Image (tube, rainbow, N blue to C red; front, side, top):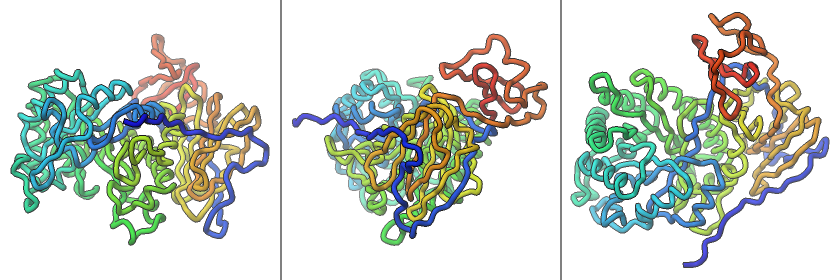
Amino acid sequence: MAALLAVVIVVAAVEFVPGLLLFGAPGGGGGVTAHTALTISSRGGGMVSDQFLGLNVRPDASFGTYEQSLVLGTTVTLLRWPGGGLADRYNGTAFGGQGVIYNDDGTNYTATATLTSFAAWCLSVRCSVIYTLPAEIANPSAAAYMVAWIEGHLGLHPAYWEVGNEPALWTHFGIPWSGWSTSQAISPTASAFASLAESYAIAIHRVDPTARILGMGGLGKGGSQERAWINTTLQDGLQAGVESFAGVAVHVYPPGAGYPGESDEQVYASLSGSSSLTSRLGADWAAVRSTCGGCVLLADEVGAGTGNTLSSFMTGFPMTSFTAAEVIQGMESNVTSLDYFVLEGGYPGAWTPAPGANPHEVYALYQTLLAKLGPTWLPVVANPSVPNLFAIATSGPAGDVLFVVNCDQNRSVGLDLAGSGFPLASAGSAWSWGSSSTTPTGSSWSQGGPTSWTLAPEGLLLLVSSSPFQLTAAPTLAGAPAGVASASLQPPPPSGLSWTSEGLAFWQLSEPQVLLSRGGRLAAFI
C-alpha cells in the first residue's frame, strides 16, 4: 500500500497594518456593501457541549494514518458510525467483525473497513461514538447481540446507541436482509416505529443496563412530521415513569430539489426562515422537553446534501460559509452535537474524497477556525440587521472569540466593532477568509486593533483576544438577590463554589440560572 500522506493546512500569517482590509474587494453584485454595528450581548448565552462538533464516518471508507491526522487536527470528538443510510444495511459483526453491507435486492458485499479496525482507529483519535444499529429489519435480538459483541469483544462502549437511520425512508420494514427486493415499499408509521424503538431499548438494556439510547436517528422527511415522531417515540419510551431513551437525533439539510433548479443564493436562503436549522431545532427541543425533560437532542447529520444534486455548491467555497453559519446556529440552539456529513467518500461535501487526497476547504474551517471557539457562548446583535449575516461570541482557555460569517454571494458587509464589547484595545489576532483563497489568512496586532472590518461576499472573520469581553450592561433578573444586576456581582458567589478550568461556574439563584466569571463578573444568564 502506498504511504499515506499526513495533511496539515498551511495558513498564512501577517502582522496587522492599520487601515489594511484583510479581505479582498467584494466580488459580484457591483460592489454592493451593507453596513452594521455588532454588539456582544450579555443577555442569553450558554455552555457548549463537549460533544458539540461531530462527524459521520462510514464503513465504505478507509481508516488509516491519513484519516487519523484529519480528525486529530480538529476539535471533533464524536463520530457517528456507520454514518448515513448504510446503518440499516450494515451487519458489522458478521464474519468476526469483517462486516457486510446489503443492497436493496438482498445481495451483499464486504465492507471496506472492518468493525475491529474502526474500533482500534477510534481509540487512536480519542473519539466518542454514536453507533447506529440496524432497525429496518426490526430485529431487537440481533441488535442486542451486536451490542454485547461490540462491548465484549472490542471494548468499544459508544456514548450512544441509536435505533436506525431515517425510518420514514425505509422500504423493507420488518423484512430480514436476505428477503429484501427492489419491489418492496414498506415503511413504518410513527406509532409502529415508536413501538419498535422501545423493543430495541428493552433488548439493549438487558445486555447493558447503562447504555444510552437515541430513540430516533433522524426522520428522513424534513421537519414537517419531525415533532410528531419525536413525541410518539419518547412517549412510547416512558415505562413506569422512566424514559427508556437518552434522547433523539434529527437530520437537517436544505429543502428543495437541488440543481439545476436552485441557485447558490437559494441554498443560502435556507439558513433563514422555517426550514433553517435554528427554527427546526427550536421546534424539536420543544417536542423533546414536552415529554422528556432530561433528554438530549442531537443533529447527527447536517450539511447541504448527501447526494450529487448540490454538487457544485458542496464542492466549492459556499459549503464552507454554509457550514460555518450552521455551527453558529447549532451553538445558539444549544444542540448536544452537530455532526457533519461526512469524513471521507464519494460525496461532494466530504472532508476528503479519498485516502491521501487534498481535503475540501471545509476541513480548514474545522482545523483552523472552529478549533478556536470556546466552551461558553454569548449572542451577537447586528444593528441594523443584515440578511444571512451570522455572528457569535465565545469564551475559553484559548481566549475570547468573535466569529462572523457572511452567507451572501453578491454583497459585502462593513462591520463597526467600536462598541461591540470585543477588547480591541488589547493585543489580538484575526483570521479572515474569502472565496478567493483556499485557506484562512492570519493577522495580529499588539494594541489598538481595527474597529472597522469588511467581509467579502461569503467571507468569514474570526477575532481572538486574551482579554475578556467588555460588556457594558448586565441584565436585571426578576427575584434575584439585590445587586445581581450589576456588572460586579454582589453578594459574592456562595462559598464552596467549584470553578471550571475556564474560570466559569453556574450559580443557581432561582430562575433563571446565572453564569459567573471568576471574580464575580456576570458573564451571561440563561
